[in-house]
Amino acid sequence: MPSAGFELDVSPVSIKILIAGGFGAGKTTMVGSVSEIKPLRTEEVLSEPSILVDALDGVEQKTTTTVAMDFGRITVRDDLVVYLFGTPGQHRFWFMWDELALGALGAVVMADTRRLADSFPSVDYFERRGLPFVVAVNCFEGAKRFRPEAVRTALDLNPGVPVVLCDARQRSSSRDVLVTLVEYAIKLISDNEVMSAI
Amino acid sequence: MRDDQWLDRDAGPVVRPYALTGGRTRPTGESFDLLALVGSIDSNTVDPMLLEPEYFEVMRLCRRPMSVADLASDLDLPLGVVRILLSDMRERGLITIRHPARTRLTDPQVLKDVADALRRL
Image (cartoon, rainbow over all chains, first blue to last red; front, side):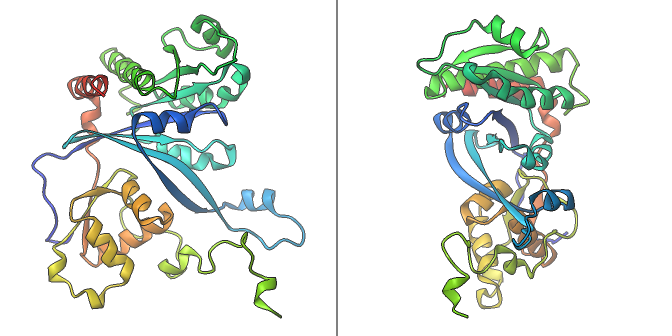
């Protein structure tokens, strides 16, 4: 290691929270309502299978793909920062999810009751990884209101997983969703259920 | 063959970002997280004329330690490219990269502080 560098008395704590859900479910809106949103690009070399899937006769092989993510930061204190990452929706970008999920505190799955099935892949993913998540039902105007219990049943969620109604445009509402997630993570840690996932 | 037959607005940047990395697509050395903190050494000790402009920009931005994700966003470069730049700079001793303090995520008191702070937003 180089001898010169920066030293901090205490390493700052960085909390990473993922905002997932189907296209148009309100991920960008939520990140933007509670934090200063910035674009983050990642350009990745496609793996061989993806190249085969994407290859078209007569088209030069595309070997890289660009994924744009929503990225927001909430500075809680000098030594405590919460980062929000809107996960890229299309499944061919799921290679990014593994990196994003690594070391994350948990995730918010945004759900639109008009297209609940769009939330299934996110719910599946976080269940399999054992990452704490909450489901936030974004109450779009004109959409029929569902009771949280109906959404829980439709998504076949485990009993403990919080389901909350929200309006992602409202800062206070998005903030409450994040608080719900952090409290749920604390509960799981106290229950000793997620020690291996962190 | 005229150039404009090949380049239109869908063609993307003429110089691909990986030109900055000499065509390499993978960083070298120990890997680092999106939230790892990058800090630069005192840039007065380095002659800016001897540095690539991107290196100099990274050093300027990281006078106060900054996360890899923040840095990529501020540089407006793809993460993969920034990772390679940073691994090269680390090898040359221009920056240090520190892992995020992840172990404290299991500390309920830290998380209670986070919940309290979020409530005050």
